[in-house]
Length: 595
Image (cartoon, rainbow, N blue to C red; front, side, top):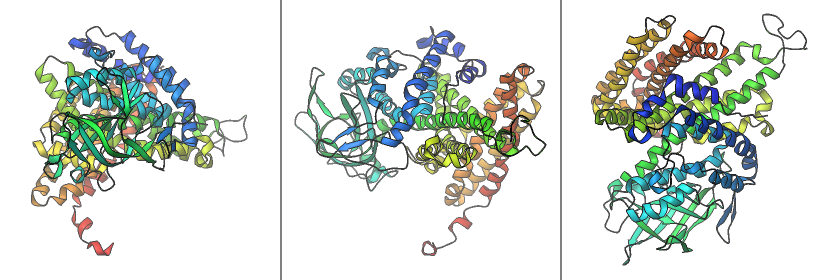
């Protein structure tokens, strides 16, 4: 059966020993009072909530799904979801990293991030309800009017209201310039919005008093394309001047999507029939405001796959130590049993170590990105803020695409470790595979992330941001290459950095001659950069663990997993480099009719 316990020890290793978050945070005026004890308390208590309350509901949500009453347009969430949400709210978890001005606890993003990981490991479908709410909070905090912020943010922070993002329409997903939803101005300053949205996560449910939808639509005089999109706040129940709830707004769920995974989350088709909304941000500048939520969601999707890797790895590692099948090729190991546990077999070890290497590399990377978000938001040093913002911009596509690719690979490997039992619903592995698959698609497909990385983030600024990250790698190599045991890691890290620099220049030159070369290279390019990022964080973890590895199984395991990553997974860059240099011709030589 699937099992999950919060990996508190590894989280603390990353937070305190690798990243040293406490002294970094103490330099930020907003977090000068932070302490390691507080950070650890949040992680430990969050782990208990996720393992004890959310995880037991994961298979329940998958089996039951959400149910729509077509007469009332109300949605009932799976058994236990509503009660778990009440516990979540009562414990104050929605307020964790929110602004104290509106009732938040004001803790750093890097403290909330482990909790996000644990929620997603325990129950991704459930975690999406508060996850989308936090995204709506961030967008309104950045672009809402004072009235919107004062009225709505306290409710989102306390958890009595939840939020959604309503972008996609049946004819447009990635290309939002094609959207057709209309917003008609009213005499009282509000707008009546008409249109249809699809794939709206958490669009309707029974867990909160009200749902506030952030809806993209067009004003009557809006220019065509993305330059004519505005953003509107459209509540399920209208909000009176005193903040109380009024009449039902005509934004309703017409159907729940029947989908491959995340059954416990209500993915809705939403109909707006003159629904009343208020403008968020400036007219025709809706995408600017929505990008706050979209970028936050991309980081959040990376956390979804990080969580799924954690629970899948734990489950398959436990199974491999318990399941007995055949004897070891080098002779029996469990002499008291009729066969050996399958963990003795080299290929089972390969599958487990692949999971572990991607999981723990993802954790270090994701927590570092969260720390950059804290620096970008709270540092009083302008240069430091700019550097952190550049790292967030450059690496958000890697968080979204590389981690979710790894998540799907790792959940598949976990299912394979279970063999036939992995294919059976009772054991839980096939659910992780199904849940993981959406993460590569929504919030901008992984191909879109690849095009964003290569086209906008690297070629768009002449490689300035990439060079800045490369300088961080160079500084690490220069500081640690002479330390005992580090040469195997620093040499390989330096080599992959050089390969990424070379291929970036090559693609840039080819792209100037033929833009299709950028499209042909983008996905493989993102994987190359992703491997460089993971090599950097695995080298950092190895550097911390090496001096403590003798006689300590935790640190020795960390070093050996780093060696596995460098010798078994990192060499993929050689293949990626060759594929990129094969060019676009082989992809585009056939006429469309030939397919």
